[in-house]
Image (tube, rainbow, N blue to C red; front, side, top):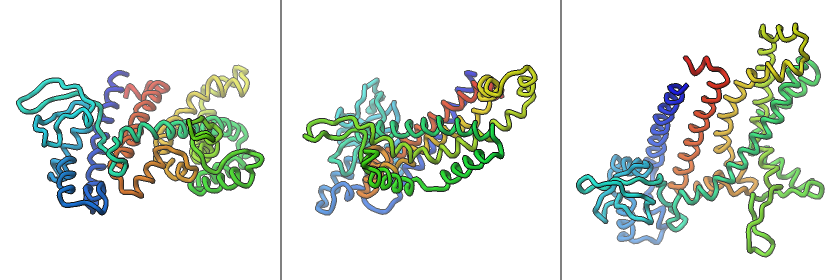
Length: 358
């Protein structure tokens, strides 16, 4: 099992390196001068030169790439020249110097995602730290809704195969997979937040924390989580229903299930004690991918509902061409996708030890 885990971690590191390279190349071959994006239209040539030197924009693409890797690496190399981009400063790098090699200082630090172009030099890591928890809460809530309802309806559908109830559940799940999230968000916001507002007391827009009526402090507004979580959970809910139904039907045909029936166990006992664990394998595998993709898919849902999460921040950054925030957000989402997949692979190996031994 240990070698299986180490193998997955090795694959994850290679995948993360590839994603980092793609992100850098994608956003650095785009037309436009990053220095001008930062300064706007009132810049002077001297200001442009200073910004390019400060952020390494005046270097070759290859050197900028290694600067980027160096910024992201926990163990990084820094020049002792104050004019060099990699010069170690407290306001730029939260680092602990380790030792020196000639004119190069080696330090241990938290990954540096650089600074926002539009937020007065605010660190991208600070922007992500402020918005990612809201997106995480939204994604977890959506997944919980999808799992609880989806597994239940999938079991009901499998146990009532080809009945009217089964067909109704299948129609609903197919409809859920076919409707785009942004359309569902608009429909839910209008219907439950506007048409039925008097009965639901739900708002069309709102975030997890909002200023009180006096504008003095943020207050927790859990009711604002209901609509975006439901909308974000619709598509994975439909997938869970289908997977759970098909997987359970397949498991129920196995020999050990027939043996359990012959021993006189009830259908409930067979499903709960014997069939459910094995039937959950494909559900767990699929839901891991859905959870990571929801961090990216939450972009439109958060924007429509005014949810102050990473998705809404990405849309705002795209509108203002704030490339560091976009790059940092995409990288964090990719990292979470990789971590989640490692975690799920480990769970999958625990559920089926044959996988870990192959």
